[in-house]
Amino acid sequence: MDILAAVERIGRYTTGLDRAAFERDERTVEAVCFALVVIGEAAAHVPDEVQATAQQIPWRKMKAMRNIAAHEYFGLDLGTVWQTATADVPALKPLLEALLAR
Image 1 (cartoon, rainbow, N blue to C red):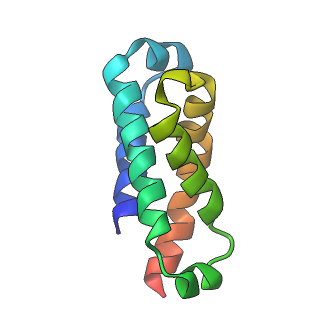
Image 2 (cartoon, rainbow, N blue to C red):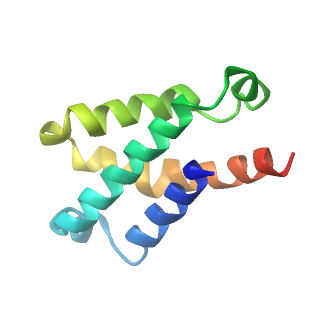
């Protein structure tokens, strides 16, 4: 699943960094933002029937973050990106794994 792969990449990209180091590392910021776009784009292609069976997954928020990362890139709040990458995204992993295990 593309979403799970992007979640795992974000985890690898941010491991060992604090927020300040993340914000200074242009490549990591761009890689994380691209992975957020992938997550949101892939979420938009998950059938409604599947989304309905996994309502604990924040499908709408994933798609909204994609739009922010893709369309407001130069105005992105890196604090929000960091929070999303280090708190919200890791919380998706067990939910996605449970969905795939069904």
